[in-house]
Image (cartoon, rainbow, N blue to C red; front, side, top):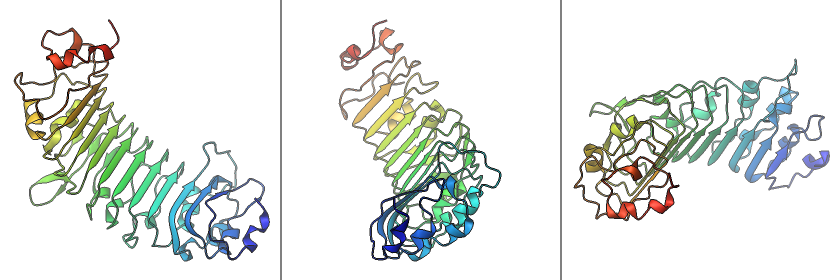
Length: 325
């Protein structure tokens, strides 16, 4: 990329910027590109060597940017005078018209205040990925338009709670590989303390095996529930699943069957899939559970289930999906 790109004052699209180690392209060049719009991804932010360059990016003045991706490198060299990530992040505050934000490989312990600022009234999607030193989430629930949240590979986050509450407009929540997450706190909404997102359509939690201390879950509009490599305790914390259509359970620790209570909550269920649930010995606690509302369950690689004598005819039809014992 030419170092003269900052001279292109009428430039409107610059989807990707990669910061070099030797000043090949400096952030101060972005300051001159006042007409940038659409998507901007800034990579290798660990190569920032001058905090004044970051300040001069003037992202707050670029009111036509919709999507911003801020990415640090996967391998950060130990340099004595390297600019701390939290200081760099502070000056990368975008204009409040932003709609989509992704932060990857950020090495700060906490996020700057602007990420949780409710003035971002158009921000509808946030992804926070591989921020390995962060111990808490920013107050994301303050964003009035935030509908889609993806949190992945934050190994030091142990508790999630008030950070997600506020506008409560989430439609999609994805938590992936939060290896230390052990507690999900609810809030008081007049019906006691619970986790209540009235517009939530899709919930995916994967590789969060320590998550066992969970406030009651009330998701009245939830249509898709995908749990992978989690504890079966999660299934017993739901208060309402009236709209649930699709259920996937993959490698769930301690799951021997779905309880009567859970099946009664999910009477609208149309499709169900069990994968590698090695403790599963029966699909339902109640043998006469009505299965007419959905198609044949998919049960590949559930070894104990195929060794029992309580299989339904439709369950036996899926046995070819499991490896022979």
